[in-house]
Amino acid sequence: MTNEAILIAFALPLAATVTQVAHSTYKRLRNYAVARCVWRISNLIMAEEEPSDEEMRALRLRFPSDIMVDSVIFIAEKIYGYALYRLALIVEVCEIEYVLIYRIRHSKGAAKARLLSKLSAMSHTLIAEEAEAYIGEEDRNTRFCAMATLVSARPDRAIHYIAKFDEPITLLEAALLTQLMRRNGAPIAYTPLLISQNRNLQMLGIYLSGHFSIADAEPHLQRLIEEEDKEVAYLALQTLCSIRGNISTSQIKDALQQMASHQRFSFLLHAVQNCYSLRSCAPLLTTEERTLFAQQINSYKCRIVCN
Amino acid sequence: MQLISVILFLLSLVALVGAIVFVVSWQRNSYHSSLVHQLRGGIAHIGVSAVVEYPETTAPLVALLEEEYPRSEAVVVTDLERSRSTFGELIPRYHLIRVNHSHLDGVRALYRSRHRAYRRVVVVDLPTEHREQAAKIGKRVASYDYTLHLQGESIVEPDAITYCANLIASQHSSTAISLRSVVGASAHLEKGLHNPSGRALQLYTDHALAWQRGGVGVALTAILLPMAIVIAAHLSGSWLLFISAAITMVTVGLFLYVSCRVVTEKGIFIRLDTILRNFYRYLIERVKKIHYLYKGGEYGNNAPAKGISILQNRQRNHNRRAL
Image (tube, rainbow over all chains, first blue to last red; front, top):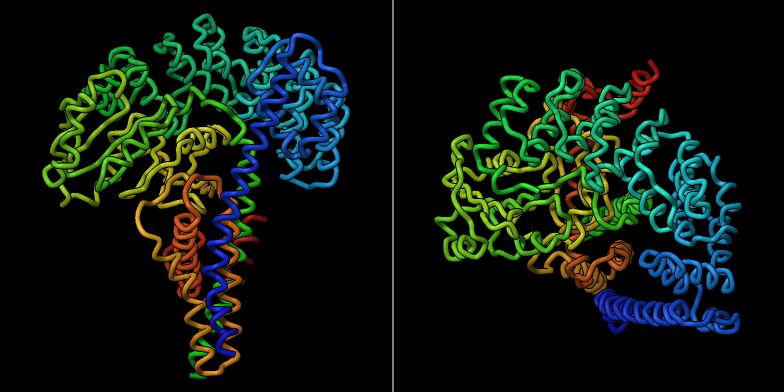
């Protein structure tokens, strides 16, 4: 009885130590396997001649599907052009997408969304059919990931899919979609997006203008500030500020008056960051905000902390 | 002895139930933040200022400067007269100069770097007597409208600020958010000073955000506790104590599982320690909430009248929503 008690008593410290060792060993081995797989796939992609089916199938036999999926996603984020075509070929021959499709079919809710987003990294037309089945799902995340997968699989129809998406997209989602479209070489022209009446396309256009600091987008952004959608108007105003556009117009004054106070304060900080002077912003601000603006500038932020 | 056995058994049972709820909430958060992890690089529209209050070493600042997210800054609030030996060297190292701080009450000096490479460093010299104002001063000094508050020796994870910015971008811009980590050290992201309604969407994340430096006392206590119970059970011969020990083991085992799943370079004992601290905080909050619901405190609009039970309050809230 004494021995059993001592054994049980020491079980947990022992379990913790064993878990620590096992976990770090597993992580190290897995990282090593992914690195080896990435190296082999990269060799096939970079080879002068197109790799044979046998060479590609050898990969499938050598590495488990989990490792293959992670390696393909890792590589897909870092290559473009003809290399992407080679990667798609490897994905097709090794039937990696079928592994994911099988898992998607047997998962639910957010897990399904996560697997779909993995599938979107594999630029292969076959996956579009699978993704289309989930476009009407109840879960919003799953619907968005299905749309992102379609954007990835058919980059030529990306704008159509984004415009058709029935929910307003957030800034993060616009960034993710841009990342996918850039990876697959889809043409991204900001002007048609900014002049579009579709809210999701407008968001995409605003994100692009801010991300690449496109000064030519100023007239379109000025127009978007008058939009009924408050979020689009606010982000257009922020982007206009980022590209150092003219923010002293009466439209901007009207738009600012309709905004919540925390949004006005965010805008004020953004203007200080982008080196706007008190004189250029004074007509837009209340007396209290003007004092705050002056205090921020007087703490020499503008001279020292400018982008 | 019998009474102690029963109390221990009940306590271990409560801890197990709490742990299951905690792990479920962590799992749910990890699912919802899957999109946030996917974006490489940041979003140009959003900035985050990290405010470190009275650190003992420069390690938290160094960790913040290693953050790659461009629209971020590190605000260190410290008492330079007391910690001159530690933080005095920061002034020449980061080319810090004194700037105007007349609008900040109680602040002895405000330093910013005149070197472009260190433009993200801000040091606030605030006497320890005004310690309670540190968070407010940090927010006033911050260049961005979201601030990540870190206590003492909390070291941020390499991608914490990028993650916070992406999470803010995942919400609609009209929503002010407040973020806490389920598994990490005491780090709290919130909207700046000018949120007069004070209302923010409370989010919890599976990302650690930051880790506390220091010992692993809580983890060791948790691991040694079942050992002590087993020995006590053996000496007293009480089966109830044996069951309590087994339940405690399962509880700690659950936290070990969470510790293994958290993505970080930190050792498992540090992770387990921080997660257990968070769990205790979570339990205390729950107890406070239940206590308040029965007592009927002034806890916002949904405060129940004295003597109204939780179920009645829920029913009232449900009716209000229906209306």
